[in-house]
Length: 347
Image (cartoon, rainbow, N blue to C red; front, side, top):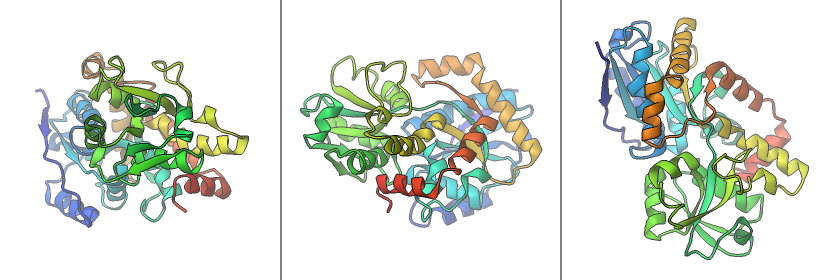
């Protein structure tokens, strides 16, 4: 029997988000990956319509084929603080029976290091299932903004749009301003990447300092060819194959220590669209989810649909390797973490 995929209505996250979500989940029927017939919930870190939502729903449509007995998969949106609201929930109240996994940005792994007041968890304690895509974010400017290259933002003001305080669009703007000396005027408050891109399209803002390249190609696939935006820099460790002539922010570093701080910040791009489960998951549930992830990533139907939807699957990483990457982040010196936090505008 083919598993059912349900398009769930998104959660409305307010100030008491984690408490409200805990109540909602507690009221739902018990689900356990050890009893797959009761179903699986996949949480998405962002609102419907954006890239993270699209990846979560894509994964949900294919995972059941690789978990024997799984009959229904539901996607629930839990937006807020670029995945931190969702991660806080998963750490404090997420079901430990394997019935719920979550998909969000790699920045959830570094948030407790740089923003411990809002990210109330230890990312090492999560069970990391796997990363679908090693994300490369880009800084872009409208073609009518007068900014054509990365050098221009150090001499001309560029108005850029931003979502929540932990979103790449805000975080990367802060890095360019605080660490590199750019002249970006940040306008925040847009509800996720879709609203931010719409603001760019309408001319409310002139650019975005952190827009996932995979979202550029899926949300506005013709903009580059039409010359509507210029890609200024890649906010990543390495250049993407699609953008061989666009420099990375690490290449723009002025000295070695600055380069090392940037590497600490941007290691998160390696695990850009990452799936994880709550702490204290059983060994059986951990194995089930990680094996299912490996199978989905190799699934020809999954890859074909991803290609059709223009959702990039670039350098996927298995759960054990993701766990190693996250553990490695926590080995950075307090001094380097402090410098990274300052670059992010956190202290």
